[in-house]
Length: 170
Image (cartoon, rainbow, N blue to C red; front, side):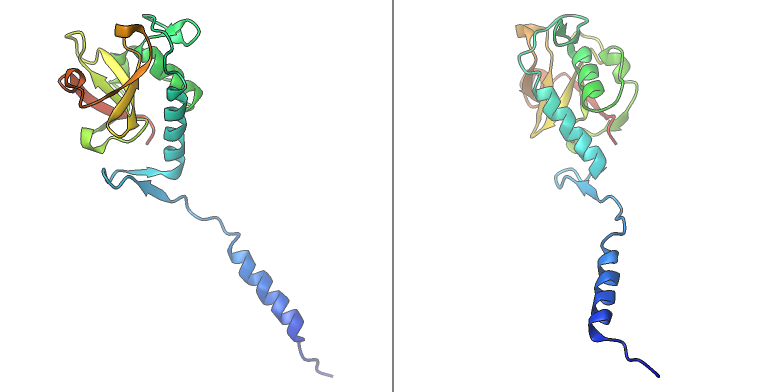
């Protein structure tokens, strides 16, 4: 005796088969910033957002030459190293000049949040570093005015001393 499949059983089977398609892993999409055209994976973009948000939490932290933590005070490279260690999961060490020797070079017009920006502020190459936060702004720990703050890259003083940018996040 031949039995006919029941319609309800067939519908359940089709529903299960189709719903399983949604369980397949999808490749991580790449995102881009329209203004730059630079691609960054969604994981790198999330990490760069974490870096920027964490860095902004350090606003008004006092300056201290050689400082590597907010309790004692931070200098520019100490701030970058601290932020990337705590929020970016990367251990960066050394002076601004040391940091400029690594990472991937980035054109100024292609800057994305989390990129490092380097300046010649002491008549020495790569004597200052900050973290680009987007919209033409960066956060840094300057010795003048003694606290972590934000500036614009177009600020005449910093614009004339900008040297290069590097990415450690992509």
